[in-house]
Length: 80
Image (cartoon, helix red, strand yellow):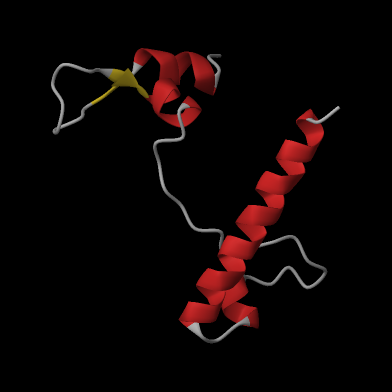
């Protein structure tokens, strides 16, 4: 049984804007070339943000707040 990482390193990603640079899916994820939105944070009610916050703009702000707290936590792990 192959691991996901082994498969992702072999599969090439097609970049229509740049023929000279080929990337594997592994490179794509390691370099964080993707964009995403946080839709759920661990909570006792197992609710998604859309269930808690009705306004889409406020959901986006909450998503960014959660993303910042995760990044701050990761940075804190590397500090001595």
